[in-house]
Image (cartoon, rainbow, N blue to C red; front, side):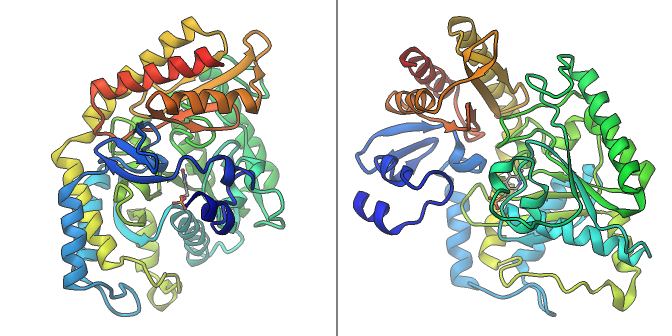
Length: 443
Ligand code: PMP
């Protein structure tokens, strides 16, 4: 397997040599919150697959629902004049979670990138139908991650995902991230930083001409960019700006949706109702590739009152795939039954506090971010005062030592990122903190 993995399986996310280096971590099985590699080594999955395995790996109800649906109806499309029962039930299930955020309809996709692409495309159509076809540009935040399609890559706020793919969508502008530890304003007060970014947004919008901007997209808590938690005022400020200039607000909830932050949506933490929400990952807990875009009344009305013009010719062969939709229904029913948001909040605080204690012990920990459910980021530095980013070799050593000691964490550029299943136990969180302790000691 190791040889074939290195030879035939393409691993383009990262350095090509990593396919060989990472070969020992071939995961062959999983149980509950643990993953098992081909050597039989077990570790707590502190990454939750890729921020997605919210219910853990052993949810029988989800597995059974997927299996039953395969025998009932393995495939039929949900657009081009047809629908299917699980798709309809899934749209109702999603509604139960996001009605409070003002959402009224769902469109299903095959993952997060598809959902972002759909939301961006929908934004332009929304303005066209309202007689403002000049609104084609997008605003987003640096350090934001919105997937790998051309639209998502265009609004991504990390050059790593953009370089070599240009020309991307024209008219995409990236505002500073609400990243207190490092920002162009040297603002260490989160509220002040929020105001500075909002002012920069107004400046950019005025400069671009407000009648050319279609939408602003942001993650309520930035995930892949390093678990960056904005000040409580930030999303609200951006909502006010979007309203003032007629710009749609898209909340990218691919990570934050369905309980990870300790509430069912990230936007709800900040008291904001977006115009559209994108989600994926936790919608099926990784048991089947599904994503969704939810739209609020304002957007739905425009499409539904547009008559024949409201047809926008957007859809995928696998939109609302019946087996995927059955996975959604079962996963969301389990999510409610287990009330995963409550455990996420409690275990999230435990993990965050545990890591803060490690920061007292190891001065290579520059910044600890999280405190809202099970999303925790640790920024590693070689010099705490100068905030010098830690070198890659040391980062790998932390990662490998933590793994050997029973926790699979995610390695960012100089960050350790964690997003374990929302079903994680107190003892398992302790195991993660213990494994990290060993990793930092080795570094
Ligand atoms: N948006 C966000 C906020 C994400 O975190 C991700 C994936 N990490 C995506 C979009 C893209 O999702 P996918 O990888 O399922 O295409």
